[in-house]
Image 1: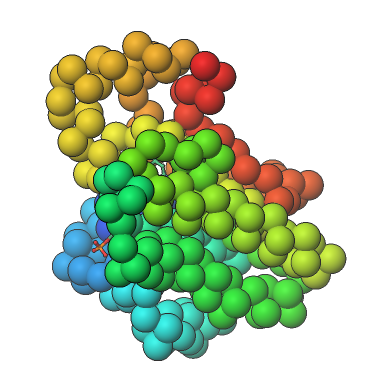
Image 2: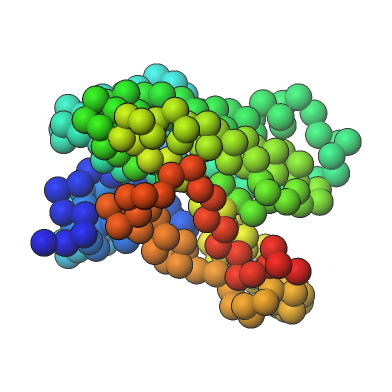
Amino acid sequence: MSLLSGKVAVVTGGSRGIGRAIAEGYARVGATVVICGRTLATLQAVARHAERLPGKILPLGCNVTRLAELEQMVDAVYNAHGQIDILVNNAAQNIYGGYALDLGDVDFDRAVETNLKSVYRLIRLVAPRMCARERGSIINIAALAGLKPEAENLLFSMTKAGVISLTKSYALELAPRGVRVNAIAPALVQTDSTSAIWKDEEQLERHMMVQPLRHLGQPEEVAELAVLLGSERSSLVTGQVFVADAGISLV
Ligand SMILES: NC(=O)c1ccc[n+]([C@@H]2O[C@H](COP(=O)([O-])OP(=O)(O)OC[C@H]3O[C@@H](n4cnc5c(N)ncnc54)[C@H](OP(=O)(O)O)[C@@H]3O)[C@@H](O)[C@H]2O)c1
């Protein structure tokens, strides 16, 4: 029996990058994984690619900024599978908004809607039924920037700080009801959203020079943590932030 056999997971933003690697990591150890994103075709391609894995990946179109679509997604998963054991809030916009004083209300609202409010809403939709079963693991993908602000990245840093705070508050309140809530805070990981950095040799070199582990983070390395946190192997762990940053916060 695989680590997550019989478990049902929902991963937002599962069509590429870190979300895709987490979905595949879960399916590799037997879970049924519903992935969502705004583009159904890319989700379907991920599902097809996973056909030979022990678990299953099932695509579902959903824009996490729209409450009605979140409600429809959660209803569809409960109707089809009867349970959600693991929720991974991964979808986000990696907003590089520029100089703080150039940002406006529209930028602020967009960042909060996508990166923070969606997490708040989805936990509210899923956690009550986890609490009723007295089991469940929620994993929020934050960022190192949420612990230590990045220059010219106010909205990303601010929303990820919010995700970290929300993780701890939910963890405290849901722990007596059997539900664990943790966060993973990556720094630079090689995905489409960071291609401007890692495709530029000079920029990449500058990053690697300051990183204690001189290695460009891969989505699968973040996924390994998400597998651990989704499984009973981390049964004593809640309210924690797992920094996956190649040691950059040490310097
Ligand atoms: N990569 C890094 O270096 C890094 C560092 C720190 C933190 N993180 C965090 O890690 C997570 C994943 O990052 P990534 O680099 O893998 O991102 P990515 O490559 O940009 O992928 C983002 C995923 O989210 C989906 N998505 C975006 N907006 C959405 C919306 N409104 N509704 C539903 N789905 C949406 C995208 O699909 P569609 O576009 O089809 O909707 C895609 O599947 C994010 O929370 C990010 O902030 C990443």
